[in-house]
Image (tube, rainbow, N blue to C red; front, side, top):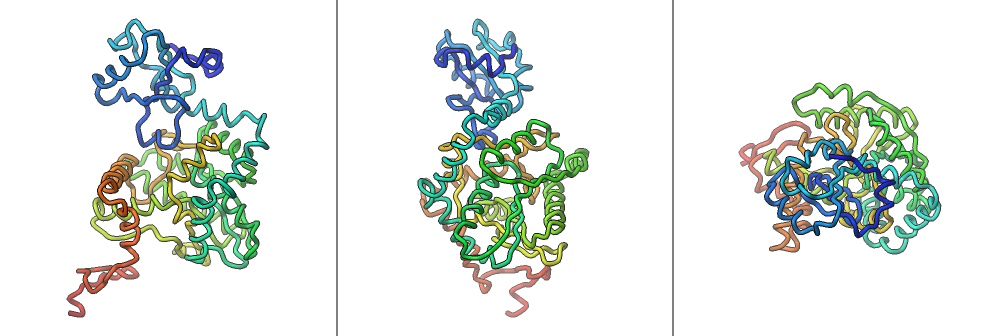
Length: 383
């Protein structure tokens, strides 16, 4: 399929073409090009043909994927529903679009101000309040702390950095911040995007490099699990070197409830993602999760309101992995669990809160067995 550049596309009348996003649903959740429609070419081509037939024939079709590599190789001559239509592949795909948006520095100061103001005003109740509540409830920020705010480049960690900057202005306790970015082997576009977004949002990042992606490149079994463990180790090590006593990760409320349910359905265990943990390998270090009570939909609303576009595809050998899940699960499994929770919510609007609170209300007297500090216990021990 012939390519069209973003600059060439912007010269066209917006009503003359239709943008078509062919990426997976789990990837689209991180952002799409405004006005695009989602049509999968991997599932049912009959359904794709039906959707495209509803687009007026006179409209040019512009397909895009993550990097423009997949759409470039679509053979529009072989697909009957594309014959007779003008079709293009967007050069650089979604990542190219995002990088171009981030590189536009003409209104950088205005965009930073808008993003910060929206945290204080429009999204104060949805974002800052639950962030501050989690910090207070779980004692995440304490006097004299030096916190390494770990930024992966995604929406969650970038917002977390802005919330830390905001709460530091309140001066209830004195603490220091280092905004830490590890480059585990990003391609140049992803690294540039992180740097550009940080500059736009006024986040003074400290970048260090590692070779994690190369190290797990040849691993066949659970590469995400290994990658996540290695990433955390490198972050702990660098943070401690910089004089920090805590690292902050951007896991939110939805991550917590999905982890609880996935543990039961796929891991045959009841566990949760803790709001804070002592490091077992780095003495004196802690991990904290200050977005613990923040909903993902509110993070997305803040992102879209400010027209921000963040890193999604970070993994250089799959180019589909936004976050290496520590349990080794794939994005598809998380999406499956997310959809299950959404279906349950249709029948019971309190299901999300119930899942979250279930691990706060464990009755040991009614549990067959449990583990504490690595030691397994059984109800028969005290029966």
